[in-house]
Length: 121
Image (cartoon, rainbow, N blue to C red; front, side):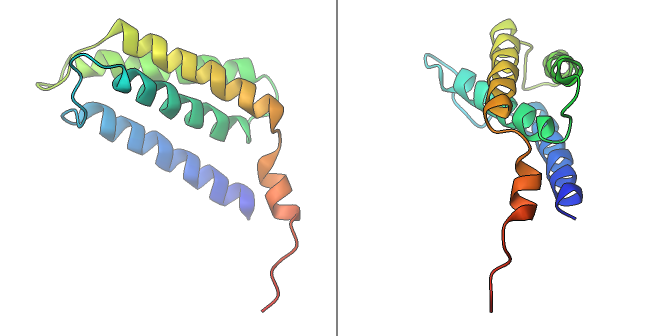
């Protein structure tokens, strides 16, 4: 049961990433690095989340998430309010690496959550 919920949460994350990445930007991008931190954190969470389900050959998952980030950046070039940005792609890839490392430090989280005792009513 927990694995199904975890998988559903992962797909929700993918859908939200696509939507947020292709709609007009919500952050002011002039001058600061907030945008890059959002990219880094978003892709770290996405990679960490899916790495809890894909425990073998995670390098394939990491490659898929990096390619997903690159595809999103290219798709932004087709929207009127966005432009592809190499630094965003690098931040996405850095987030993938960060998420991978976090998953190595905290492996098998869904199974750990499922093993917790149920609260008494």
